[in-house]
Amino acid sequence: MRKSNAQFTQRTSTKNRFKVVGDLERFDPRIVELVRRSETLTEGHRTLTLTVAANYGGRWDMLQAMQKVMAERQAAGVDSTLPVSEPEFAKHLSMAYAPEPD
Image 1 (cartoon, helix red, strand yellow):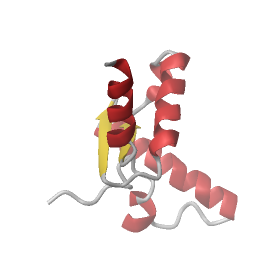
Image 2 (cartoon, rainbow, N blue to C red; image 1 turned 60 degrees about the vertical axis):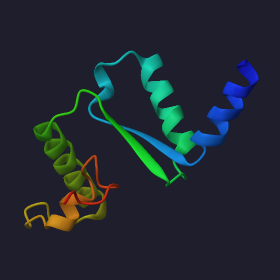
Image 3 (cartoon, rainbow, N blue to C red; image 1 turned 30 degrees about the vertical axis):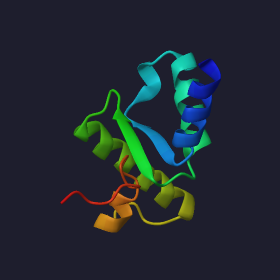
Image 4 (cartoon, helix red, strand yellow; image 1 turned 180 degrees about the vertical axis):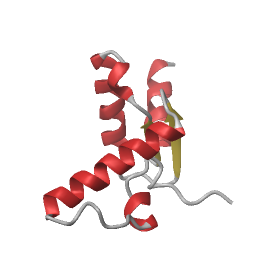
């Protein structure tokens, strides 16, 4: 029975992607390592994406996206006082990989 469960899991999970969005800094490092390893193992899979929101909030997401925009601009030597476009901002949101909801 154990072997067939492992075969089933391997056969079905190879097409699905696992993602966790949210601020994982407060989680135990072992949990974060398992999450990141699972994301890495499934990153090329596109049949279905299971997204888990853990310690996630919209304000947190907007803040971390804006911080990434500013860091990217600074690294590129771009004036940080210029207006931020929606595409520039949106690519840094946690769910940027997902299609827009209807």
